[in-house]
Image (cartoon, rainbow, N blue to C red; front, side, top):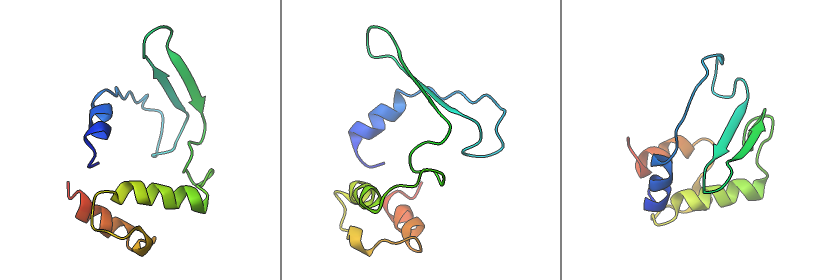
Length: 93
């Protein structure tokens, strides 16, 4: 992540794993947001972008554009074969 706003939000996230999963998308995703007042809660089996709920071509295009914004990388030049290499150039960590 290159954008300071995104990095700031990541630092506010508290991740808790229940230990019952055997992979990245195993089990349920549950979120609770505290932003004043009552917490907002959501629960889902497959998050958007997962293999069971793949993004539309337009959603994927917008995501790629957002990821490379502020760089010299042409979003139209990125495909499945080159995506990992491009991400390493943007953020080698």
